[in-house]
Image 1 (cartoon, helix red, strand yellow):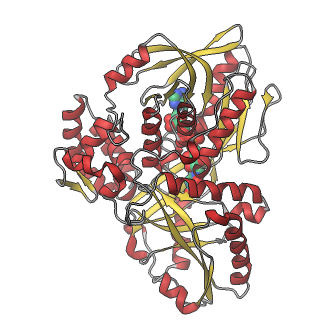
Image 2 (cartoon, rainbow, N blue to C red):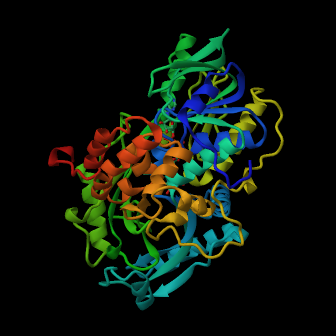
Image 3 (cartoon, protein in one colour):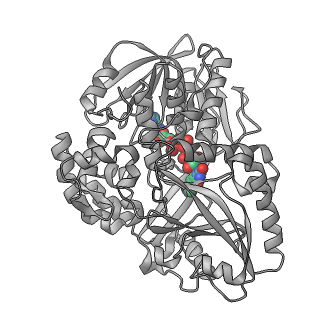
Length: 535
Ligand SMILES: Cc1cc2nc3c(=O)[nH]c(=O)nc-3n(C[C@H](O)[C@H](O)[C@H](O)COP(=O)(O)OP(=O)(O)OC[C@H]3O[C@@H](n4cnc5c(N)ncnc54)[C@H](O)[C@@H]3O)c2cc1C
């Protein structure tokens, strides 16, 4: 199939393939950044690959990140140079392989104390050095006037200057979809709304799994030589299923922590730069990042003991974000200015249990554990390094004899669906309002679909909804307005207003109930301010 003709994602066809009796080389559970990266790398190396996602692709943590492609200035401070170098390399790889969904962005760290410019500046010069040829631009020292010009609404009182450095930003959910669609182009079968409910063992060895079509309720039994558990903060549920089959209780691997983001209008930080506060009142890092025409403020780091699908912010987290914004912005946003609030769960990893052949990586932020049954669990890490993580996971599977020797990975140079040729002209940066540019080389096809140019909301037209249903696995209004378009994350009230029309188009395309009422309730939650009791 030529690269520019998209594969249709008709549900009935996908389920028919799932029902075929066969043994897959690899079954991946979880359709976030981690699972999709593994599926793509494996399919591109010629393995037969099945990926099952319980809800929608990227509906877990992978659509709720700060959307930065970064080396991690934090690891620099810890002296973990190898990790920073790897992430800086991966940052450049994403920019190259998905140029329609990622762009570089300048960050300015304002300084209000004499020592901050030299202190942070030297660290960031090292960051440039580590990036080497993968660098995106040079760190520069700025005087007071230059800093104010770069960040027009910055608090001028006591300002001494600033440091500007370069990182990347991206559309996390659309990148996840691009990974899914590229994996499908390489021959993988991927299904959303298809939770894995059981693991199948034969004499203690994992030989497959059972999953369920969440829409029709039909169960399917799948055989696979190797099963990778890439279910993010939910990895322990699958590990328990695996252990229970052997009468064992597994120690929990993940200690979740939530991060909140608040979205306001761009005019609170006009200009082309993001603001980085390296040390908040309580010693964290806070970003104000222009993204898809809005300004994203965040994030927090609050331990949780539960794993809700839609975590809600605490009042204290919102007060913290708006309070910090007020310290740095001359005209600060108030609660009435907030357009959307979204929350993601970080899978922080506890030390591995003793009852497993631990292959825990110490040199990386992510962790891979292979259980006695052969279940491969991967969690942690970050979006930026998904590709390197996938290479590592597949290497471990080969080492453990779960997969045969494989050819070298192709993912380093594999351009994702929608990537325009390198020589294509200038395209809008991801800080720009959303539009057809996010479809890259598929814009021409988009223009031919019914309803092209008929606006439903800023950055969303009727053709985009049809495209989502036909080629991007979208089944519900939420799939379209939260992840194919990012309107729910950018402006929840506008998303709610557009939802009824989106529902009509989706029903026309799929013949299914697009769950409009569920979406309207969700949009309300993205606007809802927690009460004092939720502090
Ligand atoms: C607040 C916050 C900000 C972040 N910012 C950044 C950033 O700016 N840059 C960066 O590089 N990284 C960032 N990260 C990290 C990054 O988002 C995560 O590392 C990454 O998204 C994790 O992806 P994942 O695939 O492991 O998990 P997930 O995206 O959660 O995917 C796991 C999937 O498994 C599915 N699943 C669960 N159970 C089952 C089952 N039984 N059957 C089938 N499917 C199942 C879930 O529905 C889910 O979709 C951030 C994280 C947080 C929380």
